[in-house]
Image 1 (tube, each protein chain N blue to C red):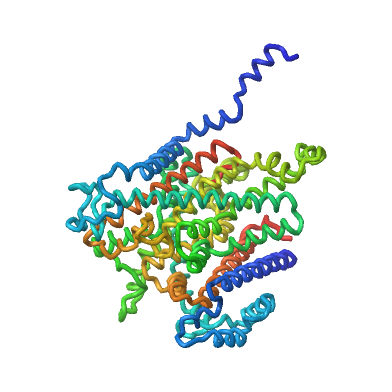
Image 2 (cartoon, rainbow over the protein chains, first blue to last red; image 1 turned 60 degrees about the vertical axis):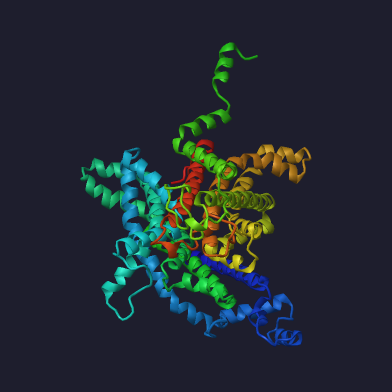
Length: 316
Length: 294
């Protein structure tokens, strides 16, 4: 276990190193590079720019610059936002909670609803329900999330007036109910894709388990179907889903960004878009690095949870 | 010399290609998807010539004309431009971006995967770790970052969509090539003095074509979605060139007056993406029954 953990950590660190190189390359591909923040300042002469470049160390060899950038990254100095001169790390942390909230609520919805659809589809294979849920999942995966969000806002906010059209809470109303009220629409929109994915994988996982010997044994023992289903099949089918949950993290993050933009949700996606339109490269890079870090961590965690949840898995 | 009976048995086995075709024809959703793709493409290619309105023509007297009433079949937008004409022209743009991005990313993924799988070693490991690293970034984050760096245009948008979509093909090709390169037929080709390029492209790659075709079809769907999203945000295709995504740009502010501005382009995107997804699904069942994905 310890050996496995060390190896996995090593792999993740290697990937993180590659990720940082890609991010660094993008930062330096930016027109004007890190200097672009000064490009529009009036009264900057060519000599000023060169002096600045020298001050910022931009006239040195690229590997040296990378080493220094990476070192500062490691020591927690992710640069300052061009917009309000706040430390990037602080800005990102202040937006993380909103995104997590959205991701968590839609994951809960997906796990409950998607599992149900998947289990039922597998139990009644080739039935009408199975066929419909298969087609439905495919269509759900094809609907552009941002457009679906617009339609939800149109129907439930503009026409029916049931749900707020965006943001995280009404100003001045700090109640939990108000907060939930705002959470419904965006988390359902984000959940559309997650439910579709989750139900497909759950169906496949159920089909794997459903014909195994231990299920037949359970049935031969005379256990009621209900107990077989909950104690034996679903429990075992859920195991690989832990890995799936980890692997779906990038998709979920992408979806959260899209949903946040439509619902003016003050999370990381919203921050990312605002930073892009301000050409706030340090923040953009910070979010890129942060999201990659989250994805790597999520995958690592999923693998470990899998090992803990399934004693048959020996990690070595 | 085989007997007549043996010959008859051999003749009973249809060639693999027609078996795949039969399996594909049984997949009704895939057929529907294919038909819809043909319809959408024809509609975008030929449609604009059949309409009395240009997509840029501004009918000042009939702004916000509702659909299914009057001369504008699908209504007009906030400037009085014909929605149907715009949807068709936007279809040209969006489908082209999706298709060309698919070609570019499939080519890139195939080359990288083939090189990594065939040569293996440090180069192969390095390339595949690059693929892993690229997949750590949520696709849209990477795409938007690149979109902010380039001058938005048809070419650049296509290229950056392709740059964020090639990784899966690379993984598929690498796996296939690595698995096949020690097989007898590949080794014998090597012994016979075939060049690396010959072995990769003539001996090994044809075995991966089925998987590549399936992945490529799904990439078109994904590329159309990605393009529509960044165009919706204003970083993709720039107006007045219409794309299904940028037509949704202003739709939100006219919800009350003209909900059709928001509905039609989204329906077109959904139709196109669903069709390509169904087609890809059917192709997977037809070409490679072993690869049953959930």
